[in-house]
Image (cartoon, rainbow, N blue to C red; front, side, top):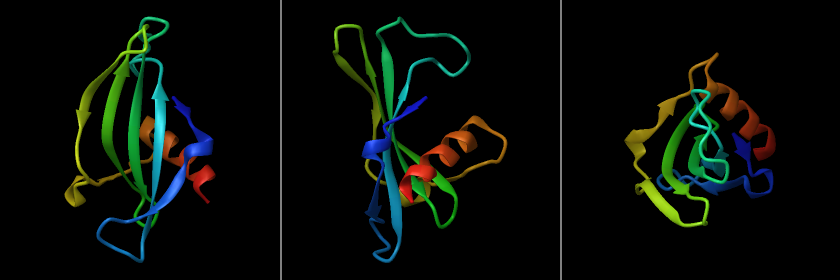
Length: 104
């Protein structure tokens, strides 16, 4: 995973005005199981992170092919019930931990 550190930003929680969440795009250059995509293909994952509760939400996922064409895998509106707790000692935990370094 490649984190766009300069684009990590805090935004106001859609339903809780006093809480900030982190809005970030992360580039995925392999499938996560050790299999690389075609060299110029990649996936962009759009996440929200909830710092107060150590939770994460995948908002959208877009695949780009070697020609730069984009193919949305899925896109959804913000859903309050879609938050997932980040589980220690997982790749998700490692990703969350790296992102929050740039959000503070």
